[in-house]
Every structure is written in C-alpha cells, then in structure tokens.
Length: 124
Image 1 (cartoon, rainbow, N blue to C red):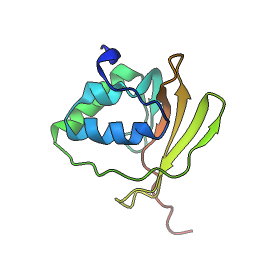
Image 2: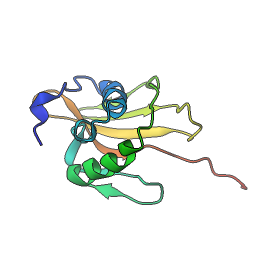
Image 3: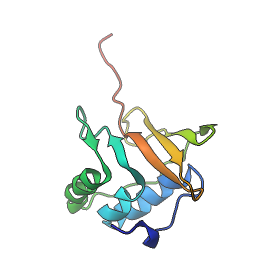
Image 4: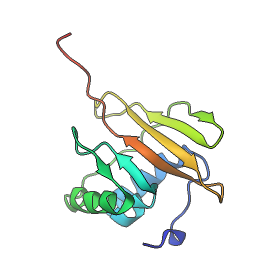
C-alpha cells in the first residue's frame, strides 16, 4: 500500500477529518493509511484488530455496507513530545472515542491505538 498518495495528518486533530472523508468515500486503504504498521484498533467491540493490513481488511468489510460517518469535533488534544491523545464526543451515543497518535519522522501523525467506542457502563 502506498501512503504517499494520501493527504497526511499534519496535526493530530486532522486524523478525525481524514477518517470521515476516506470512510465516506469507501476508501478502506485510505483509512488504514491513518494507522502505523503495528497499530491496535479496539474493534469490533470486545476484540482487537492489530496491524495496518488487518485494519484495512476490517474496514473493507465495514465500508462495504456504505455507512455514513458524520464529522465529530475533536476535544482538546493532549500532546507530550511525539505522542498525543485525541478524542471526540460521539454523536452516536457510543460514550467516547479516544486515540493515541504518534508524530512520524516527516512531522505527520498516525494512530497507534484506537478505541472508537466506549459504551457507558450501566447497572452500577
């Protein structure tokens, strides 16, 4: 997969916009290009998808159903050196979304850990 063809996230918050654009275009390879080679995605719920290629295959299946993704305004990003924590308050009631992203040698950012859904705990 050639990542050079894709716009790079030059700020951690850019990844949210790029994810929505690529997902809505049905571009699973473009979504996967937002992740480091050995990234971990906590999806489907209750499991983990590890590695960019596995993430691409997962998104091919998800995007085959042509879901529509709405842009969610990023919450304030917490940056420490070359690592950042990004998050959004989801419009779909999933509770929260959070990602750990890392600055790449070229200054762009990629996801390392992605937790796209936190479901609220009920019955406490």
